[in-house]
Length: 205
Image (tube, rainbow, N blue to C red):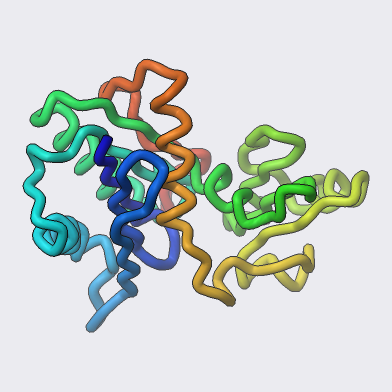
């Protein structure tokens, strides 16, 4: 099964091609010339397919990050995923940023993910579930209760410690591909169910 996954929700764009659970190709794209990286999503997908001698019709499933993260990025990747899956009549899987980032933790650790959500809140993944946008002080109290492997971003690193995913090039596209493959084995994955995960309203609303 050839699986194409992409993520434009976080600070970099990831486009990864997998054959079942084996990574075939992976690209990371950053913001360029004042253009947000999601502007290069379609061209990067085309490049990955071409480099591997494939066309969109060769893809058997689509996976994407659904958020939380950049509102522009969430709209971009969920829209492309839905359109591609619909046109190709193939399964599509949506995975949260928080579920992807928890994969950074070693297998023997209990992960907690805390990302800046603005307005004095953090997006929190703790004890195996997404807790939404939680007030900063509440999140600090929750994380103090257990010995967690903490994954955060640059803005929240000074508050929670642990590691910031932005300080190292973790293979988040590969991690997303692995999660998508597992979900394809157990769930019926319809493109209609791939929807943006907007935990917070867009800025200004």
